[in-house]
Image 1: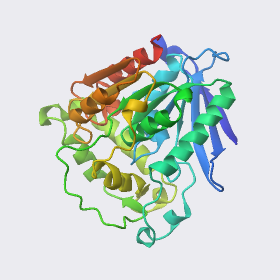
Image 2: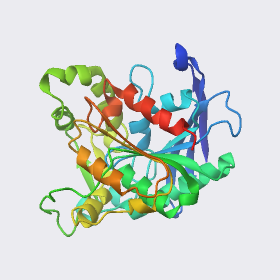
Image 3: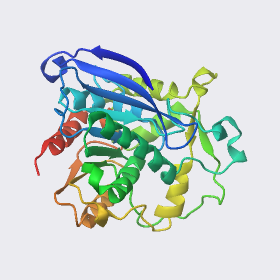
Image 4: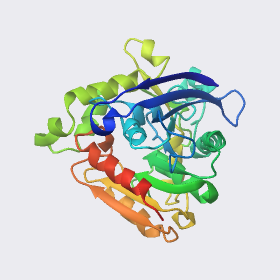
Length: 336
């Protein structure tokens, strides 16, 4: 199960704290599936010192180790959390990154229907959470969900309230208003093949006013991110040109739940403190979605809503990312 252990040193202030890295291949709840899990924490951390432990859940297009642990100017979001005293875990849901690719992803995508939907992803989350709780001998932890990951984290929290101490929902998905026409077919292909890096970058930058694009997203940062994404598929990375395969389960969820006006979970059943965060220029999960969700968290004992200026759905890879990191860190450290 255990793959490797390493450490590195940051420079100045919190960056000067030595952080230990551990990688695992964890058996999922389904036979034949292994889940890649990465853990970072300060090397001097003693058992029970990190409070709370944090598990990060990725979105529908890129694996967790890419979204949370791609370093820009020397550190990633995961590095930031670890250097600030958190015992933080990221993982790749099956079909993504370094976790097992279901057999359907070796076949023509049109031969099978959409794979790795929310119900499947929840089984992987359950396996990872149970592993972390047992490893650290604790009963509860915090979760950070991003984009599709907010669906999964929110649903998990409604069904496992005793295991979730705090919940962060960044760029949360909610019922679209007005509902766009549902043009998705009855049979959605098992997975998508993405080849066009330039198109992905153009879509990202289109949310930023033109005069500020290079300021908000330095070209070197986007180059680093896209290089990391396009190297995350072991099959596609060796192709010419390279490509990435992405399970279509989240698209199926979008059709069956959100476009149909049916939430994937009931926010009223979340009993933990919740931070709902969104960025000003987010066109994928616009601010009204976060505001609507926030009002429905009627049983959260302590809820907060933050809208960050000059940011998009990909704010953790943008110039003002420290504003987001610091606010979430503060929320995770609050007592009560």
